Image: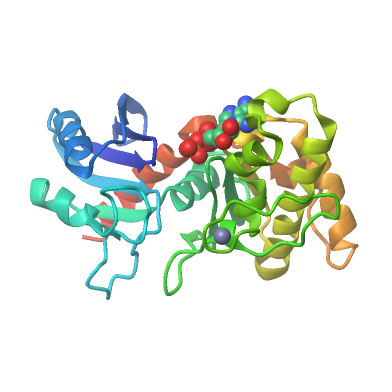
Length: 288
Ligand code: ADP
Ligand code: ZN
């Protein structure tokens, strides 16, 4: 018997099947097109296996409230065709097995918590800085959700005095995602983030924004570890800059673990979310 996992992203879906030890035995990447076309490829893949449960970590916003009549839906996404798509309903029509349903970043946080850089920790927070910015946290062994899932990428940040760029978020303009996502960097400098690798000022600004976010998350949650992933964080020079800014902004108000060990890259690299989905699939099965 196998576990299935879907990391549903806005650009691509990664699907994987693992054995009961969570060793991945097959994995595919499917371009995200329309829901029906994309899901037809997902079904083609999973039809080759007898699955006991499936874990899904999806781009959002999604409805995770079990009491809601829209539970299992992707909700107000601007992505054409995907608004109010009944993801779990469509999956359940095909496979009548237990399913776990959460955000891609919650899944990544859970993967890192159980098998990655936070496996020795009691709590962690995973933040992706890519096309968008999103975060998920694990507290007391559980993914943190309330009325809905957190939207950590849209917190409001203080503008850097040297930054005149107005921000890219259609809802809040200069929220964290608005000023620090990959597209924000690209619009501010008219160049892709990866082409600005040697421009020190770009990364100073970026670190200032990300450090503000980590200070706020620290004040709210006090997680033991921050794991920073996504395309923009491939610029490894950001890590020491973020740690420096974090110290300045937190201003010794509260204790934190040593920052070299608590503001880190994902140990599972690009497998954090898919691993989390497999682990959550196993738990969905146990709940039956
Ligand atoms: P997505 O968020 O769409 O799943 P990514 O996490 O790769 O995918 O994020 C894509 C964004 O990250 C783009 O804005 C891109 O410019 C930026 N990006 C990708 N690779 C790098 C890199 N090596 N350095 C800096 N920015 C990068
Ligand atoms: Zn926003």
